[in-house]
Image 1 (cartoon, rainbow, N blue to C red):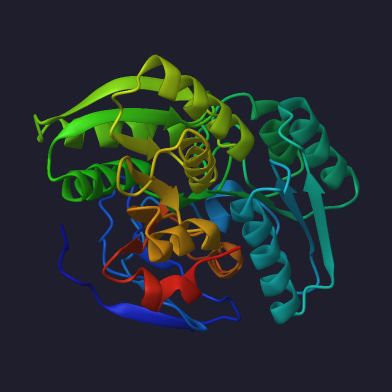
Image 2: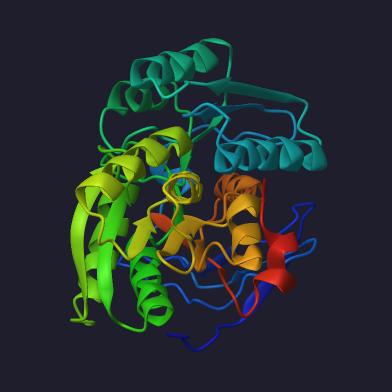
Length: 357
């Protein structure tokens, strides 16, 4: 459902597509579902920061010049996934655009202990500002404590942590994952005509992305009684694992007529499994997933996929903008929720250039 638009602040970036900021409040956010669009402009719907937002004065942290600062970025997962590749490149591109000459980049390779070690190592190397893509919602506290001890602000992106904003980290920037799940269920109802047996390929456990995308999808799907979830199993956000799980589900539930994959990589894996089994994905079995990768959007164009809810990974502009605002003394809200686009058979061919790979 489209929500009324709000005033927009346009931020010019070098990104191929834009993040759209929809809310900056401490309460639960409800982002608009209007298209974020493609091209070089990033637009942000502006909302006044809450009066009790986090400020430089409130934290007592030293003021840092962003351009001369040592900035650290901790990536959580291997960059075989297009989301991670694009996310890291967005950070690198924005740092270069801003003239930041000392950017430290690490990759934890899906190992929580390694991510903690990576962050502590960057702090030891003099990092004064940190951008972190958490592997899990829980377990990162030792690294956050280390940053706090050195009075280094931390912006988290794409996954929330269960720690306390302003006290343990500055803010979270990312999508409303419950809303993504709801929109995926709406797309599924449209693609199936409201009837069918659905399998869910769950993301990895231990993070709010999986939990929220599942909740949003199930809650919204309950409004369409002709659709029922007959199986759900984790593919851990991985294409090969998603394919293996789908192969098992085809055997154990041959009557499945729809698949909800909680990221595109698992969805593409499901397509491969269905084709190998002699089924026609997109027709015999409807497929809806979340992310917005080029592979998945192209499959819609080709007729082997039905819908993709975007989860935009181009966080570089907003992450650095948020850090700059903090250093300027402005109040930063506990979370900054972006708005994501959507692809289906009505627009995929026209918008495939907005996808990422």
